Image (cartoon, rainbow, N blue to C red; front, top):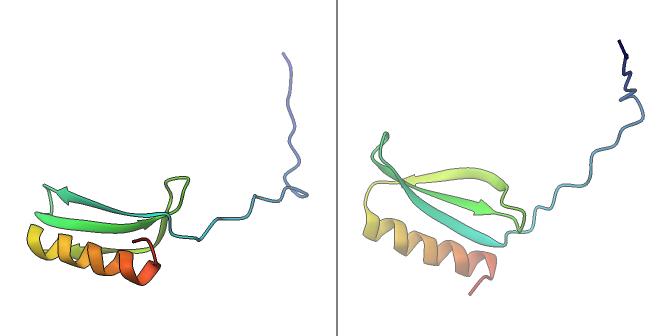
Length: 72
């Protein structure tokens, strides 16, 4: 039997990219709400998600978020 020992004391995680690459917008059937998330280029969420009741309002707010982040 072989034993593997890993020393995490000196491990440094890579820096997290907090630059917004796109806004993800999708419908959560269980919550019955639209979800908007700021995502980085690796597909990780940045900050908090925003929940909106209607599709029209969600798409309008997505455009507003994209303008604020300089994506359009």
